[in-house]
Length: 168
Length: 328
Image (cartoon, rainbow over all chains, first blue to last red; front, side):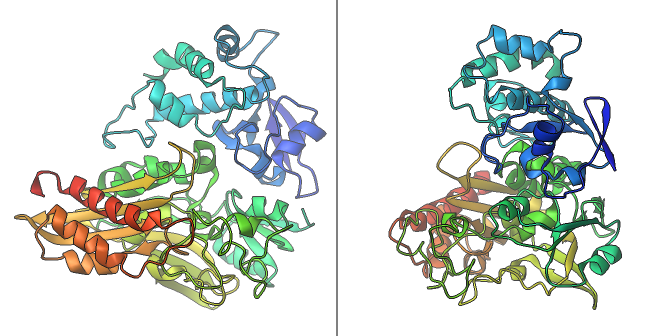
């Protein structure tokens, strides 16, 4: 059984106890994805599985057969940062940086959800085809990613800067 | 985690066959089960991955909807038919957990998540009748702000944390079960148990049975429905109290109504008393408050959650008033 991680095909471990998070960090040495709470409460371990943002700490690696995984390491190419990575730097979207890979992967997943018109609890008219893109929506939709340094204002600034046009 | 074996089932028959003995568990999104296994509170010898089973969301001939057990929460919340015909279900789902968890969590797994509290999780230091039947409950003399006010027992005061299930209870949803002895259906409101003296038994499922789907029967009145969740922070927190409701008003009178409560009991709490009291009554704030009073008449608060009784009454009345619009 194999999965694809950042474009590379890798074999899935035999031990079904291995979480996707530990597989990425300990087996593949992709330590960009972070282990915060390891219980689904903080969002630091967020990665994209087939383009959907999920928590790698609560995903078993064995469940990812034939899946396509993207981690923070897969977002830049040839030393060129993803525009959102660059925007986090420009807007002070972090202090310690521990939650940042999860924040960025989560925001990319969020953008895809907003393009699809997935509602949030702030959505007024559920029948509307297009969802609003504003700071409150970003805050609500990013509420699964905690930042203990309190860099949330910079995080929202960075996401707005890069994604405002793309979302609408 | 304690070692276990893993098998992926491609259909319900294979899942039932893999089950074989009572030490297995079906695995959906894993958002609750994997967490509990890491804490060694759940200790299955075998996991049977059922995420490859039906995740379809399909309209029935009579205007209802059947949701496959493996449908992810996000897929339900964003589905056009759910948003237009059963808006309270979309609203309940997006009020729950975080977007990442909603992308993972399945319908069946959401229904089968454990009724739980912090003392249930604290297997190093706390007593819990749900973890170890007969051990005692440290929540009753402990910090119980989040705990039940309806239908609890001296053995357990934990609450069922699902938002989705509160909406399903209000919608008269039906759970489709399949076991080695055949298929059967159970109304969602009868699916979860009150704790009694066996809080470790949370549903009426038989060993090895699998949830294959949940059906929403046709309910035209659900077009006028919503879900309100009251909690300690703006997002990503369990409910202190939540209300799912749908109402049909004809000439200022309540023609029909559905109300269910979350955060108040060991199971999604269908407010049958309030519903019965409201049918045929004027759709007014006075009627709504009186019905809420009736539903909460048997409420029993713990040391730290007496506020929930009044909060539940006010939230019921506020939701019904909002849904009544100009008619109230």
